[in-house]
Image 1: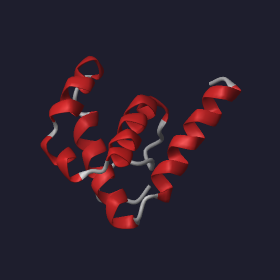
Image 2: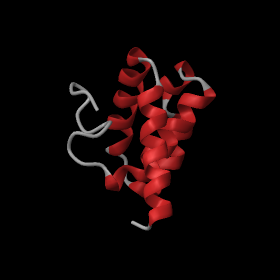
Image 3: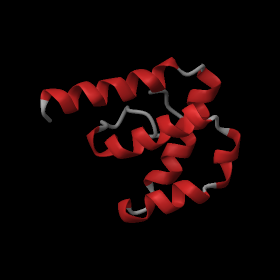
Length: 86
C-alpha cells in the first residue's frame, strides 16, 4: 500500500470506529454478509441489500468504504466475524 492508500484505509477504519457500538454491530453484520458476494457483484448487492434501509447515508458510505478496502483487513477486522468485535 502506498502512504496515501494507507492513510485512506486508516480513515475508513476510524469512520467505522466512530460509529456507536450498536451501529458498528449492524455495519459489521452487513459487511460480513456482503463479503460473501463476489467483488464484481458487490455494488449491485449493496444497492439491493434490504437491511441498508436501516442505515443512514453516512453508515452506507462507511460500509461501501469498508467493502472497497476489504482485501486489506486481517481476520480481526470489521466484518471478519460478526460475532467478534473489530
